[in-house]
Length: 280
Ligand code: DGL
Image 1: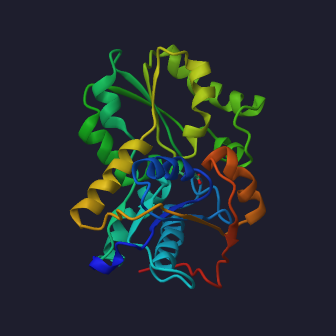
Image 2: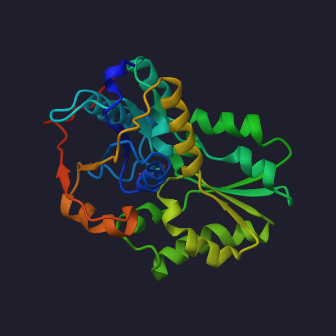
């Protein structure tokens, strides 16, 4: 990375509002950095889609953030989406070898270290469970631990609608968690970046004896390490955030106070115009 990129922003993307849980942690860890947040809400949810399609969307987004129509190219890309990380992280590193990428993987390692009952629950999308990344995490870290999985159908849509505490959101979570509790889980891994926004609801179902792992702070620390190693940390600050969506900008803007802690304008991007699906 060239030294003159120090003042460039970090790129953060997700299918929708989920990556804002990572953005929150990044702003806390790295207040000097400017950020560009891109939500691909034209295509949310990614979770039920074929991995190949998520790969084309993700590569198109990475290409755009590295060659934007306005503003500076990003100096590092945070794939703030477990599904896009599962589908595309490996290929994106291959397509864009000069850019550092930081992705998400379900936090099975800390869960396996923490559990006393030997039973942990993982909540993630179908595509995340299908990917090679999840298989490798289980293979490496889950020896001797029983891992229960659930895809929480409909939960991403509820969170996209800002329904963080509605009866339907509770029902979806109860359907996932009550059978896991009956089998003795003492740890829940949030393997989808949308889910930290319903931690209070999850905790009200599980009780305080169950630990819920949100990986966002660890990911933010990893981004700090990557920037530090490349001498790309921006000491100047304060950082600004620009929000982009491929969906309805008014809808995303309305959710920002609750999910990102600020009022901010959102710019719309369109697939086929600024953004192109990208395949190797
Ligand atoms: N927030 C995403 C994840 O971490 C994607 C959810 C979705 O679009 O299905 O997996």
